[in-house]
Length: 614
Image (cartoon, rainbow, N blue to C red; front, side):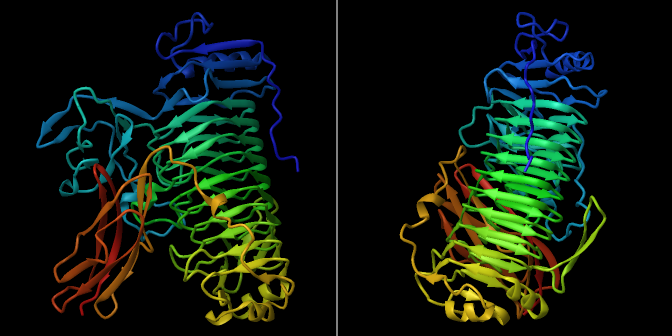
């Protein structure tokens, strides 16, 4: 597989940038640096067009600009954009705000950057709360504040933007000295772009705080060829971190896309791509504000890709999927990955022609280990699955589902149509172990022809299956939960596999490293609940990452409706939120917000309750 960039970095011409001492009227020499990165790129582009390769060195500093390596005439000359010290050259979409007025602990100033809600992406459901469509972010001394949608919801660690009067209100964390604090607002939707270029290297840069809308990325590579991304970080962008689109021969290595509001890494219509030793953690916090997980994308998502290899990828504690190949992907290899603690699937494989191979990876403590939806030609070999299933519905160590009656997709390159069913799966040499009661080693809701096609084409062998609490943990046709013998009979394969605890517990391999940012998250099992016989029940999950106890409170109940939490304070664990209506309640749909508060750290999840009177 020729899935990588091959860029020759033999440039002898260097340009330098320094935000602190530079000037854009300088020459760009080391002793006379530019002030902005864009000034250096403009000069580098001119030299490239003359066939001269250039390396731009960016000194430590914060660069409040949008950098565009734009579409210039074709050149084979290499352009490298590199931090002098990796991680110290920060390209940010945020500006510093000053001029605050204080009243009752809340700081106020005008908002001059425009106010508009992002649009729901085409094809997405519109059933989630509009907080996921916001793109404002506020940071106080580098700490993000949580956005609330009413003045009444303000509390330490939050901010509210009044759209009617274009006024920003912030309630800084307790103990903040606002006379010296640096308050930043994300105001630029993009920080960086490479457009229709060849032979580009990006190294050691940080892209952060883009005010980008739902389903977009803050730093982007478009329609380019032979691009190397090395030791780059995409952090704390409102939705996506780093996106690569319609590009060929791309390598992304040693890079991190974490703490983004939606997806960390995103790619579409790319060919010959290598992702190696990258990490994408704690993404989809913005989606989680509207209990939007399944569409929120999480750690990394790829669509319509060809000849792509993901190796040594780490994806921890995303509030969505850890890694997702969605629609019309071919010739995909995933090796040596560690995907753990993700609210949805550790790995989701959806609507793909294949082939797609998963090998030698560890998938743990997520909603599903692998969620296979209407995809063919999937090989799952020599992997470890542990403690998956239990954060939502339709989950297991390996879960097989999809479109009833198949799904027709069209190859974006050839125009050929495929009527996809989940067929031709190979399971070989894997270990599947449940970690707590109520989990499943295998699950499905397939029935009829869909189940028959799956079962009759499955080739399964040499697997180890185990649940410490029960011998029946396979959920097969018609919802029957059975043991290994009945499973083997149902699929007519897997006869040489065993039901046995693994010799070595996989729990150690699943453990996430300490987080860069101590925090907690708050998740629900749906973004819509409908009362039946005057009652609805939501399942709440709190996960602490180096943080303390979290107090829970539901707000927004209409008259005649009450809400009761089974636990009002917990550090990590599960609570139930039960809604009850009386005969005086009015049939309506209302937004309810569940708040989690710990000190000055606040998270919320807003969902819709469809009220039916008792």
